[in-house]
Length: 131
Length: 166
Image (cartoon, each protein chain N blue to C red):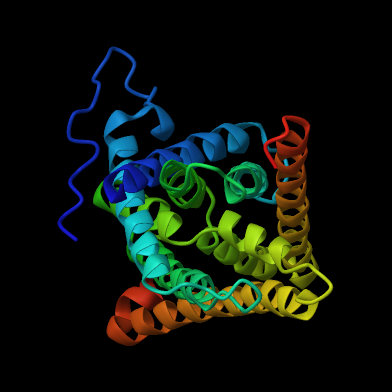
């Protein structure tokens, strides 16, 4: 399982790089929107994965899928270190206000996305009668 | 960590040399990121499974991973940026260690879900402390890494520092 999890993380990291490059080519602002998009969408997906598999039935299969998709793929896809460094760089280049707003927007966006993901998973489980 | 290898060793020499392949279309660079991301993710998973976080407590392991990863990324990027252009082995190292290993090691999604899970009436203060503590410590660690690396380089090679003109 650890191997699958690591492969998921590697795939997530590559996907983050591709998404970030695609956003950077179109981004006309000085704020690194690619990392923000990656962290928000990754939080949404992890919310769904966590919500669906917390109340899971088959303990072992659920645990494996959750580890590979959640800890592996979503963990490798999203990044905290780049968000921190980009906040510092924005702070230094564009002023404290821009840095703080970037960090706050990433935080609020990711928390909202994770909340939506968990809610969607909960809804899916209750409507299918699995919970 | 071994030598990352030269990502540009097989240049696609065509009749129009200025058209370099974009990094995200370069299979060699993507492979470096993949390997680095797999290693970083495995390291995080090993640390997370070694200690189970209390459901309503502060997830200390994720917090430590994210803060340490931010510090190391600050050091790495500043060291690479201050010692030469972002080409060849430097770009390989940045993508393998930075985008790959440290990007895979740290995680925003786990941090976000853990925070939301603590946004209950009972654990609300814990959730807030975890959220703001992670962000503030992460940014502070990254800033410390950047300035620390800058000073290290200025101290090690004062001539190069003045030549580069800061």
